[in-house]
Image 1 (tube, helix red, strand yellow):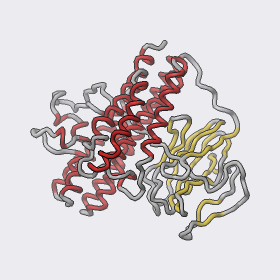
Image 2 (cartoon, rainbow, N blue to C red; image 1 turned 90 degrees about the horizontal axis):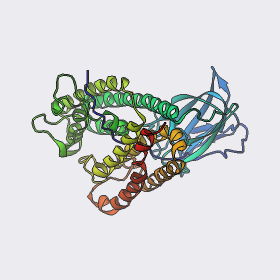
Image 3 (tube, rainbow, N blue to C red; image 1 turned 180 degrees about the vertical axis):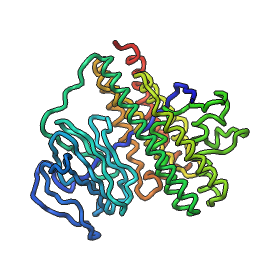
Image 4 (cartoon, rainbow, N blue to C red; image 1 turned 90 degrees about the vertical axis):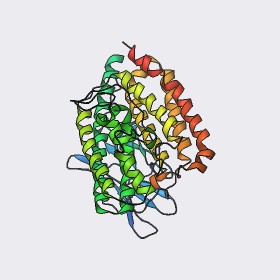
Length: 419
């Protein structure tokens, strides 16, 4: 099958909160709100969500009524399965909803463009407080409370906690790879249609999934190829950049499509070939990640590697040389790094609680800095990362990432040597 080299890169966790149309604590009865545009938003019943077909049902509504809001019709649910159904009525600033426990993403929906059909995710929750996170909303986070049996605190030896966290992370990587497949298939369809603008939109939607997990998939070489041959290297075939072009292998993957869409503003037969090959190679990648197992230090090294990727390729503007959506990639890298850390956190808290808290605090500061550059009207949801904006903002972004890198890089040794 494939040869795996244990290099890993980080992804980003974007932090956004949900603006409440309702007051979370006060649950008034059966009030329905209407957006400025006349669209009906979620009923503001409040209280505990009803259970239908075995799962509590919660409606999440994204809207723009002067400010962009993310509202829940119920702020509580009983312990057990909970289904969150997300509808974007009119917000262009909010395209993502996450349910988090501490820093770990338990469920999420992305690419939530206004007017698209509702989509949902279901998670099984124990009692306690969770965070609904809607990047771009005002406010960005809100508390969702689950009543009933509280979740047992993580128990067992440090080694057991780290092993379980690694297994949970492996499952998350598989889900991201499968979403990546959906994204690149959509890109291929848009390219095949000949619609340049639709293809650009599909490209932007597909990119974050790779950025979240690229440290886990970097370095896979297909059977029969020498490890130094880029023609068999899945990371090259999927994510090569102009700056890393191997003349003997040629253009391939995401950035070959990006070049044609943004630089030449046209779809050629070559563009269609690039998009088709990208879909095929991502399909191979999906099968690879299903067989991956991780050691705790792999997660830590991968998170650190993702932040190095931010510094070396995103802040410099090298990654998205034609589309200039580097800050969307930046956000994806940070999200992936945060997810890896969150899965190590229960074990790390037993090893070095001060370091665990320091890393969590620094992730928050990176999110805060990155959020300054969100722009709902821009492709990818952030300001265009052109030369002018890089000169103005790169130093501040780089410093925030550096402050996170320093404590984060200490984790691998801590978890590798834990009992």
